[in-house]
Every structure is written in C-alpha cells, then in structure tokens.
Amino acid sequence: MVSGKILRDAFISAANCIAANKKDIDALNVFPVPDGDTGTNMSMTLGSAKAELSAASDSLGVGEIAKIMSGALLRGARGNSGVITSILFKGYDKAFKELKEASTEDLARAMELGVERAYKAVMKPTEGTILTVSRLAAEKAKQIAPDTPDVAEFWGIVCDEAERALETTPELLPTLKKAGVVDAGGKGFCMYMRAMEQVFKGEGVYEYKEPEAKPAEPVTIETFASVVGEFDGEITFTYCTEYIVHKSEGCDDSLKLRAYLESIGDCVVVVEDDEIIKVHVHTNNPGLAIEKGLEFGSINLPKIENMRMQHEAAKKPDKVTVSSSNKAYVSVPPEKPYGFVAVAAGDGIEAMFRDAGADCIVKGGQTMNPSTQDILAAVQATPAETVFVLPNNKNIIMAAEQAVKLADRKVCVLQTRTIPQGLSALLAFDPDADFNTMRSDMTQAFERVKTGQVTFAARDSEFDGQQIKNGEILALENGKLTLVETDMNKAAYRLIKRMVDGDSEFITIIVGEDVTDADAEALRERVNEKFGSRMDITVIRGGQPVYYYIISVE
Image 1 (cartoon, rainbow, N blue to C red):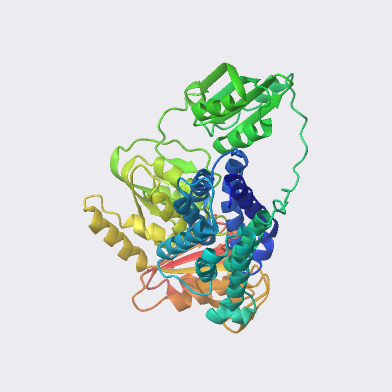
Image 2 (cartoon, rainbow, N blue to C red; image 1 turned 90 degrees about the horizontal axis):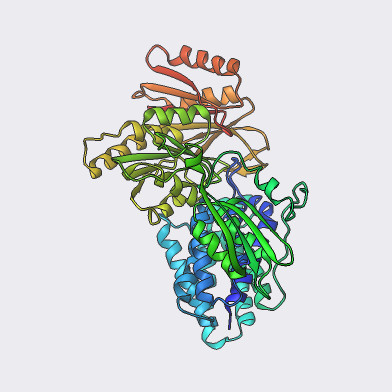
C-alpha cells in the first residue's frame, strides 16, 4: 500500500528528476524555433507543487497529499506539456478522495482518470505524444493491478510499458522519425515515472540540488530586524506578517515552516534559537501564515500590516501589468460587463494592446510561457463580469483554459495564436453586441489574419527534408516553417511576398528588440517600393524578444 508520506516523496522525486534532466528533454524538441521547451515547462509545473508538498506532514493520507499536489500543479501549469502533466496528476486527486492509503488498483484508477481528462482537455489529441505514452501505461496498469498487489513490482511493470510506448512514438509521428528522436513529453513522463518508482522501491527520493546562489550572510535572532527592514521594494503581496513562535517540545524543523510560507508569499525570513522562532512574510493570506506557525508552538506578538494602504497604493489601477512570476497585481471586483487580458512581450506590443483596450497584460510569449496562476491573477485584476483572454501563442492556450474554472467571474479564452491575431480580435470587439455575437465576430476577425514571423534556429535540425543549422534565419507563415535564410531582412521580404495576395490591403511590420532602426527602415523601404502603391504599410517598434519581425497581412 502507498501511504501519504510515500506518495508525497514519490512526487517530490518526480519533480527533482525532471528539474535535473529538463535540458535533455528540451533537446528532443523537433521544431528548431526557440520556444518554452517541453522539459522546462514540465519542470516549472512540477516544481510549483514541490514547496507545498515539502511542508506537508507525514501523517497526511494519500487523498490529502493528492489534493495539495493537484491544486498546486493546476495553478502552476505552463505550456501544453505542463498543463497535460498537471491534468494527468489530477487523476490521483479524483481517485484518492477520502483514502488514507492507496492500493495498486487505486493507482491504476488514478492513471486511468488522469488520461481520460487529458484526452478531453486537448481539442485534437495527437497520437505519438505524451498522451499515447500515458494512455498505454494506464491500460497496462489497469490490466495487471488486480493480480499485482506489490506496489514496487506493479509500478516497475507500468514503467516498462511506458518506455515501450515511448519507443513507438516515432512510428506514429513522422516528424519524430525524420529527426531520429522520441517524443519529448513522453520522455518526460517516463522519466518522472521511474523517479516515483525509486521511492516505491524504498530507494529514497531522486536527489537534485538547485544551482547554488551567491551565499548570503546568515540571519540570526539579533539581525532579524535589520534584515526585515531591507524589504522596501515593490509591493507584491498585501500583508506584512510577523510573529514569534514559542516552540513546543519536539516541534518540526523550522525549514518546513519556511517552505510553506514561501509557497504563499515572499520576503520570507525564519530564524530560530533554542526557544523561539521569529517569522516575517509578505502574503495575501496572513491567517494561513499564523495558522501554520501554531503547528510549531504558541504564538506571541503577531503583527499584520496592509502595505498597500501604508504606501497609498490601495487606489484601484486602470491598467495592471502582471509579470510572469505572478507578481504586482491587485484583485478587483467587477465594474463593467466586459474586459480583456492579453499575453504579450515587448514594450511596444504591450502599449498596442493597452491602446486597443486591454485591461491587463501578462508578460510572456515564446520561450516564457506564463502559468495558469499568472493568467488567473490578471483575470482577477480585470474589473469586468466577463473577461476575454487572448493567449497569442499556441503553447499558452491550454494554460489559459485552465484558469477558466478557477476564476470568480466568467472567462472566455479566444484561441489567438499570434500577436496580430490578438490585436485583430481586440479591435473587432463591439461592446453593444451580445456575448455570443461578439465572441463570433472576434473569432472571425482573428482567423482572417495572416501572420508571418521571422526568428532564428535554436538548434541544428532537419525539418521537412531540409537541413537547418543553429542560428539560421527562419520564416514562418501562420506557424508553419516556410523558408530558411541567412539574412533576416531578406527572409522578411520573401515572407511578405508569399503572404500578399490580390485581396490584401494592409501590411503591418512589428519590429523586434534585436533589430536596428537602420535594418527596420531598409525593410520598410523595400516593402514600400514593391507594395506601397496599392497597400497601406505600417512599421511599429514592438520590442519583442525572439522574433526579429512579426508581420500581419490583412
């Protein structure tokens, strides 16, 4: 049987394993365009729950552990691979409710429920991915569970099946076969399953240490006040909470208290001597911080201060920027019927969305996929009864959709895959139309937009029979690799020529942060010479990373 402690340690082992091997998983990505990468997104997703689980008591049952794990994963999910991983683990929460321990049949049921939910969450499930690997593993688990009560033996057989399934992925996806690799998400699944097996076999948690930061001066009871006084920067959580714990005999290690506080806030300082623990934390949940402290002893001299009121920052902002680390937002009540959240990166692009009517901007995009919690925070900061979310990247759509069920207001995710699509959808908004009409009009508007993107190859690769070298210039038309060049302006010009047809009226060129004014002007002149007599041409400094140019043709 699996206890809550064993399940907790198995999950921490899985998170450690993916963190240690994320670069190897990233390297399996076939498409050479720089992106959030599978291993990185899986690692950040799994890591989002590690702190909360590390603080969980050994006495909790599997149902309680699964609930903690599932909730944290849902909020921290990033990218499609991260979201699918969080959904697979949601099956444990569903299967283990009210259970103190889990049998192999319970584990098999958890895997089955997770796979069912994952397939439903993906609009067009693709075989040859993590979905296939997890499904075949779950089917094997269900088959053998009644006759295999030993957890370690059971899990080992399931892992073997998952690895066999992984080896079949190139046969199901021709792009994998051409590249000579297996599916990255499926590989990650197999790796964290083996890390969990390590715990089930009694071999301990997979060991992984985060890269060491520059060592800081140790904090003591005597220096506590001076260290706390250093937290004078930007307010990211509302309540500054401090208290003293008079330690009870045999209380847990204060590191567990620190781990929990770091999961609900920041600016955490926890120091102790033989008798007391002094605590400082900035959090939105001071009650939870104090309640956790009571597990370590009796509390004296609690102090809670509203930092926003102190700094006259309680005024409701018209526009709110939410960073990809889920900082700097204020949750506000609805005041208007409709509002917008857009995901974007680059000062110029952010300004365009604000000017077009976006209430909140989530900083993110290619290579920096925001989490579900980041998007949820922006939704909560939008003063509207119904909030439309514009993901503007195909790898962010699933994370945005997970926020729908967590928000306290109606949320509609428009499946915009590019910045031009997001802007077109926003500009098509008609506040006088009913909800269904405006959603349909905005969807039709962004689907009409042709988007071109010019970027660089992040790795050597072969795609559609074409050899691509690291650093070469790539041009994509509506997300599909169209041509490879050595010069970004030449690639952009060729791409625009491909995109323009007899019905085209407008060309918009959004210039990235790595493009000089001279290069941007040279491209504008060349495009104007070719199309200026019959089309409106606009060049905007977007400041976006990764993409030298983002091009819209309408």
